[in-house]
Image (cartoon, rainbow, N blue to C red; front, side):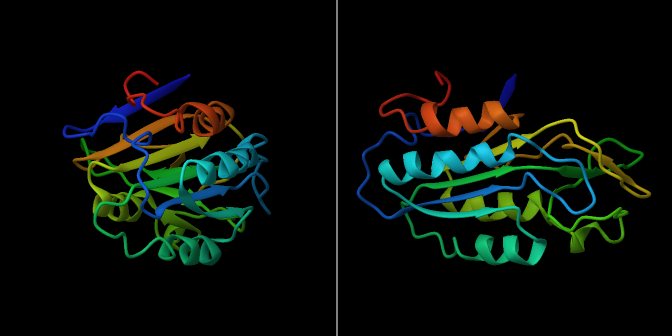
Length: 201
């Protein structure tokens, strides 16, 4: 099952516009980890790379990546030129902070080397979704972030829980969350369907 979080001012037919610009898609599927359970369907996300390239995207992709490698790929989407479309698709383990008041939780997409992080060390073993959203906001109204995961064993320390927190989605960014296999299928088929609004997908 997937859920989508759509902010106001989303442009309809976001990815079916037939733009000739050099739009960018970052696709990372982390299925295997040194010290955590395998996310079996995470690498299915990489099958979407060819479909996105066919839809006019320059695709940056990586599989089973350590955190520093993921940061380098994320840096590769910058700068986001005015008018370009941007897709960031991440599948694998996520962890979120636990706070004792409403709001304020953070979520990290974890690298291959993750090994029992706590709230103080998780920033060195993953990339913050706050950073991902800040980058996506550079393509306001033309940005889609896909997040796929599975319920698999992972050891986390004090202040962390597995999975995604409630997400604070920026204005003009579409976020789709679901199981790793479902998100991969969505990216490969529905997302690149020309002339179809995100709501219809």
